[in-house]
Image 1 (cartoon, helix red, strand yellow):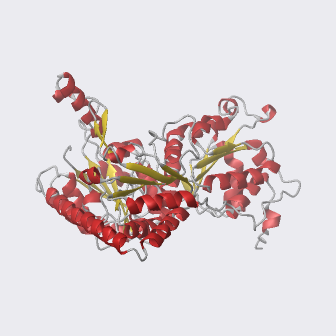
Image 2: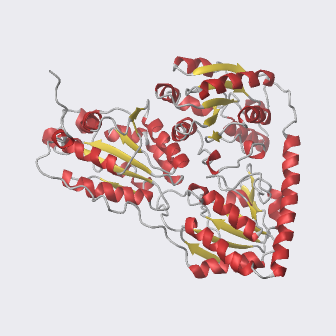
Image 3: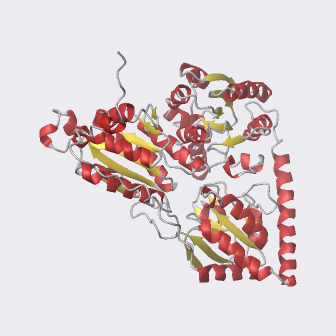
Length: 587
């Protein structure tokens, strides 16, 4: 006899089912996790009450679980859910959560603890894995954390956490659900937030007077520069930036924490520090870090010099002090500005564009001025771009290959595809050689070692439905941290072309040791000690194959790379990940 399938109302019998209803109510598409007994009740509810919808993605480490959600949110604009096992799982994930926080990424992290009722705890293990209060471990770098003390507190706190997470500036939140609360049967009706309830507040419009003041300064400037950092995270941010730049005749330097502006547009001056010397007005747009793009750093002496003219004016439209950390200094050095428009660039930039349009209309003198500086910026852009193409050909046949040769080999294989670059940009090399012509081409640069393979998987997951060719230029040292992420790619068939940026070293730090040796007169030839990844050299292709990922390499001779990339591309087009191990020269 076929057993009759129970209805949802009949199935809902455990308090953890309420959490599943909320996960579905807020339309999360995936849940990344590493298993743990503290959320066994929730796990069972997701599988049996929720039909594993949204699906859980099993990750080999909590850091990978968080990073996948990080990359997914950057690429899609949608938050993922993450589940972390009690105190130990949370502590394993700390660094990844911090990176999500400083990158302003929305992420709904669910944890579990306890039971907080001492009488329900298993000997030893439930004691050593429980904290008071568990969220304190990440409180300095999440937007909000909460631990409801009964099932009655779960729906409201879940809704509040979602609202806080998705309100600009966005960031991760942490919800901790007591194991005993999850495992108790439902004994009464627990109301959920009403369907018509607004999940996220409307965006905050900057003060119109401040917008008009910035527009006046743009019109009066002889050489203005727009400096966007997170603008491209908004659905229309990329196109809004193009409209503003063209209307104002302003050069654009894209900080690249999102893709804010097309790099081959004639008004792009990104990475051309010589262009900054003429700038008399800097307009910061959704920005935290003013310094890195506008200053010259002597990495040996730590001395910083401003490239922009000393008499230049600075203005901004951003969230400024909203969400300022009381612990981390990720807010960077404060830049004095003459106008500060506090609010969201999603609505502020179109308003600024319209304010400029109003001033230009019917003013032939102003129109001529804007046309003249647009032509001047465009000429410099074309000359700089041509120079970069010539520079990329230097040492073209060297083996191991240059990073520029690697960038061009990858570009020649993918340029006619609908492609996406995940995180690493070869020390900005691809920004000088590839054509980033669409908003989704790149969700923004990486955040350092032990972030890139996980974030890249999240980016690839976000683009899986569109069947885009997602390219991960994967540093070797980074993959050594989280090699198990390759297994996740194979298990869930996340298509991604992984091209190893393998210089067999943690070379960023190696460079610092070279600087110290030269400054102090010590032996430069010893600078690699504690920095190199040779003797033995990791076999990344062999490692990938052991995880179920198609792989070839290592290749040192650049002439061997094209064919390997083409073979790998066919694997990715079939819906699976592929890895090519390419060995590059030290920069």
